[in-house]
Amino acid sequence: MKLTFSLPEFRDIDIRLASVRKLAQYDPLITFIRERFQVKIARHLTSLRTGKERYSSGRLEKLPYDDLKQVYLGIGKERAVVQLLLDMTSQPLSTRYILLLSEILIGTVSYREKEKYLVNVNGDRQVTTPSGRIHDDMEELVDWYNNPVKAGTEHPVARAAWLHYRLTVIHPFSDWNGRIARLMLNLALMRDGYLPVLISPDERQNYYETLKEADQGNAEPIIRFIARQELDTIDDFISSPDYLSILGKYELERKLQNINKGEKYIVLTEDSATSNLLGILLHSSGFNMAETSMISYEGCSKIASANLFSVFVKEKMPGVKILVHRDRDYLTDAEVEEQRETFSRIDTHLFVTQGTDVESYFLNAGHIHHCHPEMKEEQVQELIRQAVHEVFPKSVDYLWKKEFGRHKTEDHSHLSKAVEDLVRGNPDRFTHGKTALRVLSHLVQDQIQRKVVIEKPSPFLKIAELNQLARSIWFQQDKSLSS
Image (cartoon, rainbow, N blue to C red; front, side):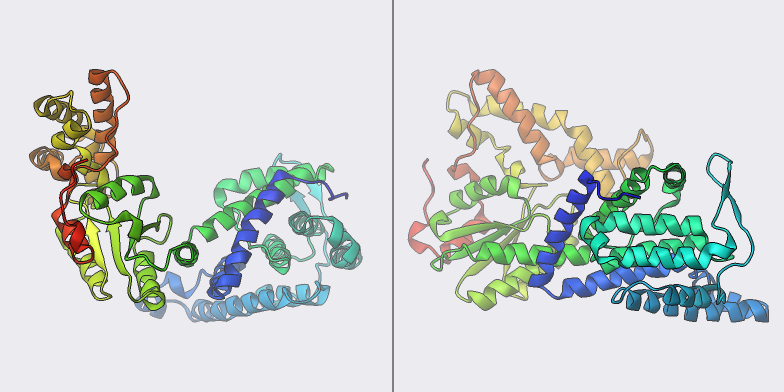
């Protein structure tokens, strides 16, 4: 079967894995995380994790003796299979080790001796390799896979998918052929530096359809299917908290290399999209922005990455002050204080917005009048009230999700009313600032009939907390801004 065709999925897979390998060069911990990830999938693939974890200690005592023995034997088999699979990734594929895998799993030390018939997804009878030919077909398959010429011309994912398919056709053992074929699929993937994959129950029907296509001589569907599973697995891996934490540290350290040695303050902000607005607040509060660097920790593993990076900065640049920004969103005061205490231990100031986000500070009649003097403050205040009223349902929904972990549905219970009353009673705190500011900008634009310009410093954006920090560095610059 010719497997030299190219698929766009191959390119996407290799691009993603190249970024993983690059990060592994930066931090060896990635290799450990990846190995742990592979072990987790390998254990799942053995299908032996149906033993001890299913039973509490009290239920274990009630099991019959033979069942209890199988529970503990299963744990040993699982570990043996996982270790064997990982060991096999470092050497050429051989039928000897495939037979050993079968013996560990099901106690079978040889290929099946009886004929085996399968029924495909359409209900049609499918003939497997005759028992007398299994040995030769397995040797031929292994030789094909180990062929260095083939390995240089066929994409590794295509080779792994075809190895898997051929094992399902040969059906070499009396039982567990599907599990063994899936283990061999992942062995092949891991040998070439790819991640092992799982085929979810939701994908089984599609998977069987691709096998049927391969039976009819079309290899592309099964290869494309496995490639997409690989893409999904890579995405899961690079979205894991452990990976994101290292990625966040790497990206922050890379950004740190571009910081001038004469900087007085480094500001870490969680949202690159609002960094300009945050810079305006800092400027308005007395920060000398020529001596202030702003770095986004967006996409990192929550605020923990900012904490780790703060420690790193203090080691490299002990004279620089650090300010960490995060939006309050719908955090409670207790949650904010807990985070503030964490940063204070490393001599880092945490600035948490009073409203839900940075944008909430710009819902400010004085500031907008300063930017557009043709509008009276009273007129602007009425537009702010309209904007807050328009986004009220969304503000309620966000608070509801914070409290109950889901979006608000049509619910007229006392809880729903309590949340609505809380938002209505304290709009400065709970109005969703980003949305309200967009609405307000449109309302102002309708009034002045030209582009709204509110992203500039003004004395009305001065924040006492930030001004105090600025004064500790730039004494001479402690004055209100007039423009």
